Image (cartoon, rainbow, N blue to C red; front, top):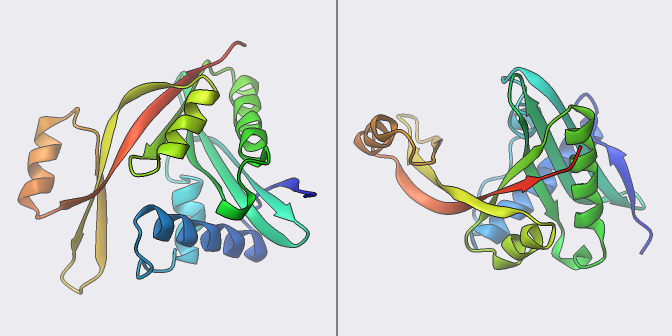
Amino acid sequence: MAVRIDELDPSSDQDVRAAAGLMTMAWRIALLDDTEPEYPLEDVTGVLLDVAAPGDRAGWLAHEGDRAVALCTVVAPEGAAHVIVHELWVLPSHRRHGIGRSLAEHAIAFARTHGRAVVRGSHYEGAPASIAFAASLGAAPAGRTEQLRRRGDENQVLEAWDDGTNAAVTERLRAERYRPVAVWRDVELRIAP
């Protein structure tokens, strides 16, 4: 299996569509729900590359020929000692071939280049293979985050995340009728400079 890893270009329609397609599939598999809506193209750069937060960011797509088969996006928040892996996902048909490890190595290199000693990520609790993958890289458990959703006034899906560290936020989200849809296990990987 010849796979190459290319930098994700957020200005490339082709890259954004490939990333959105992979994320749609990832969510549908993770939530065991093929009615999960398409990942919106306009959200790819905003969500995957977290463009609203100050800091440097990068992403990579793994390709087999012209087909995107895996994705990784990272952000180095301004003033933080860590980087955050927003996504690291490989098509089920392409797992256990070193693609995920190669993408993780790109994320670690990004962290080192930016002088960060910690790589953080979250793994869907219903995906034990993902948690095992992070452990195989040396990542340790670092907490728990709930993914919450509710319907807005125009029936749109509104989403929020709660790591349980701020009781006032948790209480407000519950009062606004947000309900848990998934639990994520947070992990941290300490890296040598």
